Each structure stands twice: as C-alpha cells, then as structure tokens.
Image 1 (tube, rainbow, N blue to C red):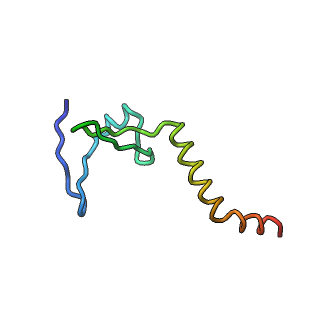
Image 2: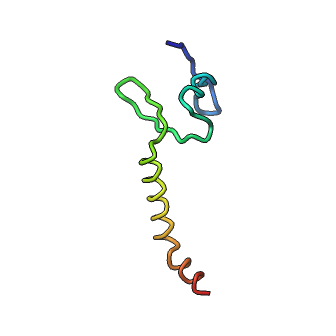
Image 3: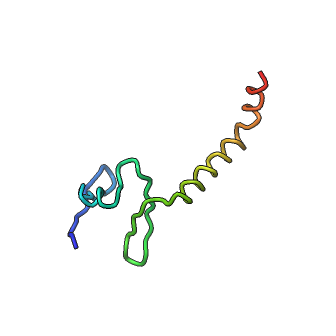
Length: 77
C-alpha cells in the first residue's frame, strides 16, 4: 500500500500516479480512463476496447446526425 495525498490543481484536486505504477499498468497521458466509485472507494481504470469502440460509434452517429446531409452534398460535388 502506498499513501498518497491530493494536490491542488486550480479549483480542483489531483492525485499523482508514480511512473513505475503507470508503466506496470501500461498507462500514459493518452490513455482514456474511466473513474467510478464503489462505496467509499475510487476506481480508476483504462477503457476497454469495447468501451472505446462504443464511444467512437456514438460520436460518429452524432456527427452523422448533425452533418450527414452536408457530407452527402459535398460528396456529390
């Protein structure tokens, strides 16, 4: 067990994760992380491939819904 303290970041607080832990978990600053709670525990975990795909598909659907007609008109030119 490693004891950690929160650090002030503007109006928020942050926790610093040591490099050896990041390396062990194969996590870097580009890794999308999911934050959940279980009772009084904070759980931080990388998104699974399935979750990443679902998020991508949802964003793609949103773009298609909003700009689909414009994309079709541009493709016809």
